Length: 503
Image (cartoon, rainbow, N blue to C red; front, side, top):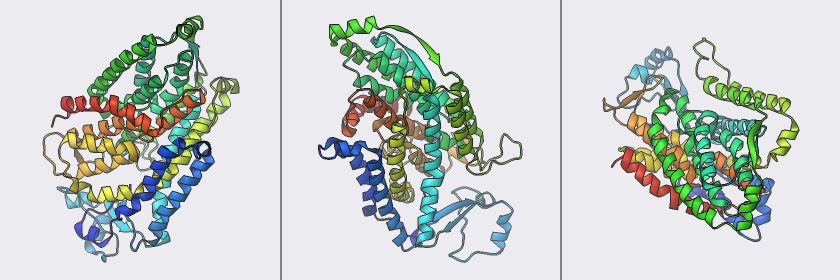
């Protein structure tokens, strides 16, 4: 997200994009939704290079807008405390960097944030690329890539009976594992076991859809490494173990979903052909793991993500990691995984780079084109009248369904921080600032839970869908998947609202 300055004068002096220029972002969403359904474009869209072509063209149109824009982009930088007196002693000209205090924040504390504007033209384009690609897309894709490749070396052998209870157990284990090794890691470790277990059954689509709900999204609610939005919250000062406090919301959603799934799968199981159920019984193998050294490399990735932040000291050592060291270390663990894992195991997993390639091609366009709607949202978010937890839960959640839940989380995290402090219910962040804790709970749950509402709400959703289709499961279309989400998830979110975020 490219943040606009909070001061009214600065905002007035720099134009907010017209809603018209949201059309490239809308176009990429419609491409994902419609092109796979059309006879003339179905096979064309299957090629990742064509997805990249569409993403690149729409991204270039967005960058064209920023290049012709008559003013710059507001950019926030951290300013060292010792610079405050100098700034106060020598007031800047209107075009120089400005310092904006958050509401109710003492001026000497607010002076740690400095805002300036890029020059119109190429400087603005480079500022957009720096933010959208280097600061958002690269860390996002690196983490997904690392977990995808490393988890691809873990083979869960076995073929248990595909009963409703067995499938529900796999989903439940995945919901727990997702918080420990991330939604991507858990998805890659368990999706192939689930697909192999159900390979003799015909009614499998609902099982993969619920897997996306539980393992690729909602299960990752309990630790910052579980899901990208929570990781971004950690980088903004939320204590690492604060998310464990979401266990009640996590548990209720997981139990409700597992209950709904078990009933649904029981009905589907009873409608399977007798021959298919007999084949399922005849092909039973005990479950065991191979390639377990990769759990060590996943642990290394998790450690790097949690500690190698270039804006913070490393474990209080006084040493601050240089930019992108975190990503370099993650890729080093990918190299270790490839070097220490037999190719036979990856072949057994039918591992390839198609799924992560699809995410890379589609999301580069999404991350660039969504800068305009995010800029509008950031500028006008305070005008939405959001004040109650249920407001933040639903608005964060519904936008997370289409804007990718990580940057959407950041928008409403910052919006919540601008609201007046109430005294009671305030959470002190690592940087000394405060945020209303009930609002942070609602934002966190909305972003993580409702990232399951569409294929593009969270990175692993796309990967699981692609792997399932490679295994012969005909997954729902973009809109078909949303029908599943609307029928199953939305009623459960209403229950969650009345239990935890009561209006």
